[in-house]
Image 1 (cartoon, each protein chain N blue to C red):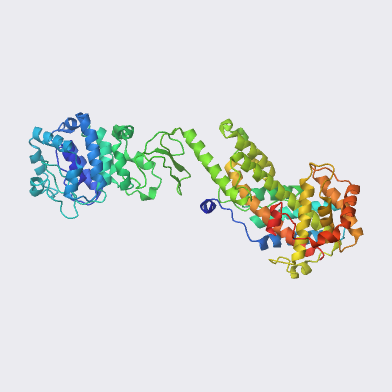
Image 2: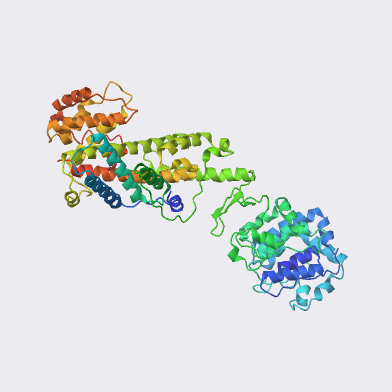
Length: 460
Length: 160
C-alpha cells in the first residue's frame, strides 16, 4: 500500500500492513501506527530535516503515482535513487526497523518474503513500493493508491515535522478526484499553505461542511470525490477554492445549497469581491452571446457597448412595429366588419399566402420604415415615388375617400411618436398624389427592386 | 449558443398561441365597442396596442416571466383591475441596482446601456443586469412573434 511507502519514507515505526481494501482503514492503520511509533522521532524528523529529500520525495512520488499499476521496473526507474539512499540511511540508523515492521502480525499482511525481496516483482494486482532495502509490506493493488499517495505527499511534507502524533485528517483517505491531478502535487510550495492548515487539527467535520454534495458523505471524514483540498480563505457564501489547475475554472450549481462554487484562476486575485465580480462579468457576457444570436446583424458587431446599442435599437424597432401594426389593424377594422368567424375560417396564418399580397405589404412596411426612420429629415424626403405609392397600393382598391380618411390616422400616429416630425396632412396628400402617377410603374416592380432594410421583411 | 440556452430558459410558445390570445383580445374589444367608431381613432389604436401587449404577455407565459408580469400589472393598473399572480416557485430577489455599493466598479459602459434597456423592457427597473438580459432575450423573442402574428392578421384582413 502506499502507506508503506510513507511509512518507509517517514520511517515511521510500524508498517502499515494494509489488508483491508478500503482506504480509510488503511489510513487508520497508518495513523494508529503513527501513534504507536516506537520511536517518535524515528526518521520523521530525520527524514524531513533534509530539505532536499522533500523535493526528491515529491518527484519520486509523482512519478510513482502517475503509474498506478507499475511494474517493478517502473518503480525502480521512477524512484530517484536519492530516495533509496535516504531510506537506506534511515534503515541503517534505526536498526530495529525490521523488527518493528515484523511485529504487526495482526494484519497478517506482512510477509517476510516481502521484506526479503523489496524489489521483487509485485504480486499480480498489487502495487509494491520498491525501496531497495527497506522492508516493504505488500501493497494491495489499489486504484486509489495514486490518489492517496499524492495526498500523503501533500500532507506529509508538513505534517511529518514533529507531528508524528498529529491526528491525520481523514479527508485524504477518499480518492481524490482523478489521477490526472497527481502530477501537480509535486508543486509542493503551492501546497504548503494548504498543508499548513492541515495540522491545525481541524476536524474533518469542518472540511465536510464545505462539501457540496453532502449526500456523498459516507462518514464525517469522507470527502466528496469531486472536491480537492480546500483552502478556507473566506467564509463567503460563495465558496472559493484555490486549485493548482492552471487557468481552469469550474462552476457548479449546487442543488442543495444556493451557492455557486467558483475556483480562482491561477494568478488571479482570490478576493471574494473580485471573484464575484468575475462571475458576474461572465454571466453578462454569456447572456450577451445569447442576445447576439437573437438580434439579426449582430455578428459583425464586437464589443459590449455596440452590441447593447444594437439590442436597444432592435427592441425599439420591434416596439415601433407593434405600434404601427396595431394602428394598421385599427384602420382595417374601421373599413371591414370585424368578423371573428370569418377571420378564423380564412386561414389567416398560412405559411405562404398571396405572394403579390405579401409583396404589397412588404412595400408598405418598407415605406413605414422609411417614414419612421426618416424622422431626421424634416423636409419629407421619403422616397415619395416608392413609399407613398406603396402606401396606396394595398388600399388602392378601396375608395380614395376612405384612404384619405385614414390620413388623419397616419398623422395621429406620427404625432404619437414624439421623436418624429409631424407630417401635416397636406404634405401627405401631396406625396400620395405624387405617387399616384407612378402607381402603375411601381406595381410592376414589386418584388424586384425591393430592398429589405429591416428584419421584418426578412421574416415575411 | 445552444448550451447557453439550456441554462437560460428562453422558450417561447408557437405562433398559434400568440394568435389565439390576440384574436381573443380583439374580439373582446369588439364586443366592448359595438359601435363602429364611437371614439377617435387614437383611442382605438391605443386599445389595440394595449390588447396586443397584454395578449403577448399572456401568451408568453403569464406571470411566470418578470417582464410579462410587470406588463400585466401595468395594464391592470390602468384599468383599475387586479392581476392574479401565480405562486412563484422561487422567490425573486429584487436588487435595486442603483443602490449597489460597488456600482461604480461595474462596467460603466454596460451599466449605462443597461439603464436604457431597463426603460424599454417592462419590469426592468428592478432587475439586475444579468437578469435583465435574460428577460430582454425572451422579450425580443415574444415581440418578434407578436409582430409576425399581427402582420399576418393585417395581411388577412386587408382587402386584396
